[in-house]
Length: 367
Image (cartoon, rainbow, N blue to C red; front, side, top):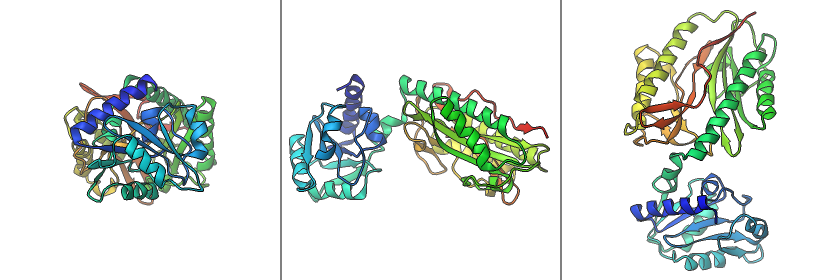
């Protein structure tokens, strides 16, 4: 077992003790990546990492056992297709002393059939929760190694955005501009993850599906991009205008920038996530555009592009040092244009540190 895995299991067990959790069950995915640094191939065969207060083990399909053994020395309880997982699961729970855990925390991303298999194997009075109070709470605070990878990816994303600025011109399609962005990520060994390019009226759809629409002079373009390298992603949104900005653009851009700054000021350890959302939303509402800010102010970023903490109007999450999340207010005017400005921050003792080095200023393409 690696030192990192041992440290994270110890931290998880401390959370389990504090919350009275007798079992944490994790399926192949990002939670398992955080604990172990890898996960077995995910498919329809039940595979679970089961963590009790003193011991841990795997419920492991025999098909994947040999390959997974190369990455971990955690005990396996294997099962074959011809037999099914029920007996192996019972043995696994007995081996770690979790046949009656009292409270089980389920990986909220696991398949429903995996969850039901485990629930059916536990006593009827077992209480169930998900991971925010245990594993999820730990994942929200990034350590120095995670920070370095996120910072590296932010720098790559900066350069990919600059490649978009250099490539943007009238007559090309949204998809062609996206190709230039993806090519840059790939040139730095990063895997492109998403590429929202919304020109003109398409920018008024926050999650526009990049299309073959031809970019025209006068278009304001939302460019929201991210890549992944060494297991961690990036995420950033900037604005590009082809030639003369559309009427009213400058005023709206200024309002969104003020909303970003208000959210940055509100983001302090001890504040609630909802306080940050309220700060950004208040600026936009006071300017008369509250109905056109149609999404949350931000989301966490780590192994997953979207993960806790979520910066929403209803979130009671208390912000802590080391949390990483986006601040991305926007205003979307149907049929005209949208403006979103997004940066990823890590929360420090005195406030947010922006991971990107690229200014949020409008980039104008001269025509």
